[in-house]
Image (cartoon, rainbow, N blue to C red):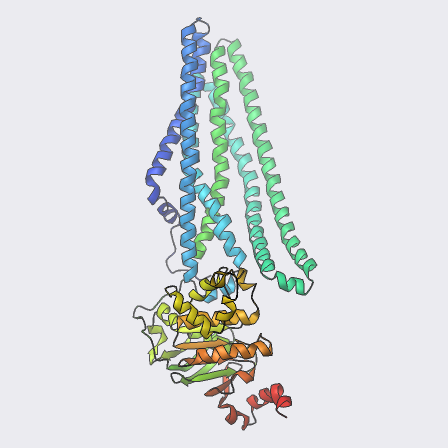
Length: 582
């Protein structure tokens, strides 16, 4: 993954998300302080009741003690409500902001990023990882603050009762830490691996559901189930390891704490027998041990939450640091171009491997139709993707009306380039929404005009809900020809000066192809058009046909000229149509 040159400071970047919620954060910390302080009152008041109120028969004071304790519990309940409610809301809002930032950043990433990252893995970072981050954002400072305060406060209080017993409790602290760290290392490794397996499950699920119709067509449901079960079993395996480690951690911590209580009880009993400790002090001390041990356990458990949150945030930042598409400092917006298109010494390769394009030189006058033909993998589609800067030019330059595309802003360039591909992508929604995707400010009349020019208006108006009809996920309710004509209507509405038709009819049957071709011919009028074609019947009337093979231009000329040369084009043509011409 490409990274920005300047590496982010993770801590500062994380803290920056607190800025809009400073008031809530400090109120949350204040509520945590009050919650912590009030937790110390019960053992303090209990000690006084056992040592003074009960032996002295002080009924009034005992009743006041009960009333005061109820008041403290009411206060604690209010503070707990604020922490649980508004603290979580703050975490959710921070998560939403991160998700919004991540989505906006994903929109700016180049094609190459999506070539190398699965959708399911990206979704896992958008959902699972950011959930762990939001939990850390809320519970992290709060747990750290409350636990630290309670550890110090309770230990000081324990020392005021009996410092020797306090040292015994403190002596168990290293044992608790060692047991916890060892178990948590196992847990963290297993939970981290289980998160990766969750991403794999998401990726497999997204892929399988998207391709469910292909799966059914090939009756490969058992194969898909096998793939899913493999990832699912991996998740169960690592999650089980994590829970086994968690079980060891829980059992070890509980055992250590209970041993500590037993040792303190025996030692305290001996101190009472020797007259060095009152029974009330011993009872208060035993009650207060949990005030010291529990925050220690919580603090140690916080290390797991911290690691989860840091790992999730680091995975989030990895995407946020991926280099976005940027205009050059001198790039300017392009007004409606005439459409003169020139490739000058263009070469290109993916990942510095074998060159896909080698020194391509083509000059396409405005309004002309040029076709690219040749064997699959020859570089035709790659050449087309370089025009709207889907991939960054490595060598050579492409010019539009004499202006290098490097000096044209990405947005204005893409607004003037229309693309119709073999694999049409339609968004879940209505006919109107999908056509209007070509121009979000289009009027109803413009949408209808575009649909008429694409020869799909009559079909749409024949439906009960007309343009408000839902087309299903990715247009599943439509035929291949209807999808293609809908995508053509979208381009009509966009009204680009340069048009790219990338195998636009290769997946259609002959009858449907004729219908779609009429719409495409209408679309090509007055536009500079570059056609990538496998079916040579679609490009006979092109102003020039260019044969590209192995990244190089092998032949070029009109249909008639190329047939007279006895070259590669003639071989391609005869292999497809000779039997029909005889």
